[in-house]
Amino acid sequence: MAAIDLPLASLDRVPALPSGGLNLIAYGLIAGGAVGLALAAGFGLGMVFAGVLAGTCLIFALTVASLFFTAAHVLGGAHWIVPVRRLIDGLSAGLPIAVGGAVVLLAVGGAWLYEWVSQTGAEHAKLFHAADGTKAAWMTTLRWAGTSFLILGFFVVARGLLVGTSLRRDAGAVVDGSEARWSVVTLIVGIFAFTLFVWDYLLSIELTFPNAIWGFYCLANGVQVFLGVLTLVAVWLASTSLRGLFRRHLFHDLGTWLLAWGCIVAYLTLAQFVIIYFANLDEETGPILKRLQHGYGAVYVIEAILRSAVPFVVLMSQSLRTHPAALTVAAVSAILGNLLDLAWWIVPALAPNHFEFAFGLLPVVLIALGFLGGALLLAQGFWRRNGVLPTDPRLIPTINGEHLH
Image (tube, rainbow, N blue to C red; front, top):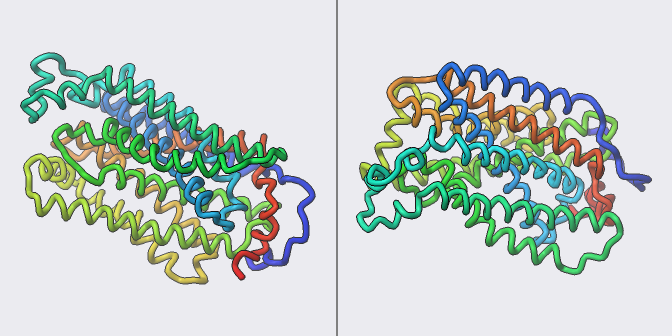
C-alpha cells in the first residue's frame, strides 16, 4: 500500500464501482445462507426463524451503526471520514432486508421463538413476575408490531434524510445545517429506538432476564460489524484500479477504530457479567448458565477471542495497522465473532439441554451471512448509482492527508 501515497492533484470524475470480487462474495454469502436454511430445517422451523432473527438483527444493527457513525462525525466536523462517506452511506442500504425480516418474524416467526407471543390469556400472564400486570400488558404481539413499525419507520426516514442530504450536496444543492440537526435527532431518538428493538427481538427470548446495558452491548456489536465490513470494502477497493484514492492514513484510522472497538466490546461484555455475578439473581444467572453448559460456554470463549483478542493482537502494531492482510484478518474475525455471539444467544433458547451445532449454531451463522450478502448487493447498487466517493471540496485534501498537519 506504500505505492499509493503520492499526492493527488485532482479528480476528474466520481469513480465508478469496479466490477468483480465484491459481487462474487455477496452471491457466495447468499448461497451460504441457502445452505444454512436447509440445515436449520433439519432441526425444525424454529431454527429457521432463529436464523431469520439473527440476520434481521445483524442488518438492522449494521444500518443503525452506519447512521450513528455518520451522524457523530457530522456533528464533530471530522475530515478523515470524507473518502469513505459514500461507502458508509451504501452500507445502510440493506435496511429493507431488516424490514422484511422483521415482517416475517412478526407474521409467523414470533410464535416459534417467544413464549410471550405463543401464549395467551392466563398462561401469558403467568410468564411475568410483575404482579400488577403492566409487563404482561406491554409484552403483546399488537404492541410489538406497533413499536416495530415506528422504529423501522424512523430509521427509514433518518436514512433518507442523512443519505439524501449528502447526495443533494453532491448534486450542488446548498445544505444549511439540516444535516447537523437531523444528526442530533438520529442519535438521541435512535439510541432509544434501537434499544427497544433489541429488547423486543433479542432480550425477550429470555423473558425474565433483565440486562441494563443490553442496548449498548448490541449497539457496540453492531458498530464492530460495521467497522469490519467497511474495512473489508475499503481494502478491496484499494486492491483495484482505485488504489490511489485510499491511503495509508485512512487504513491506519480504520485499523485504530477496529482495535479500539474490540476493547470496548470486551469491556461491555465484562461489565454485564460483573453486574450479573454480584446481583446473583435467579432471573439473571439462569439464562447465562444455560449458555455456558453443553459446549455453549466454549463457543462463547471462541467468540470473545474473535471479537476482541484477535483484533487487539493483530492491530496493536502501528505498521500492521495499515497492512491489508492484517486489516482483513481483524475485520473478518470481528464479523464472525459477532455472528457467533448472536447464535450463542439465540440457539440455546431452542436447544437448552444439548449442544446443537450442525442444525443450530452453524445454520444460524450461515443464514445471517446470507442476509449480509443481500445487504452487500444493495450496497453495490447504491455505489453504482452514486459512485464510491462523494463530491466534496474536502475530498482531495483529505485523501492527501492534509488534515493530519
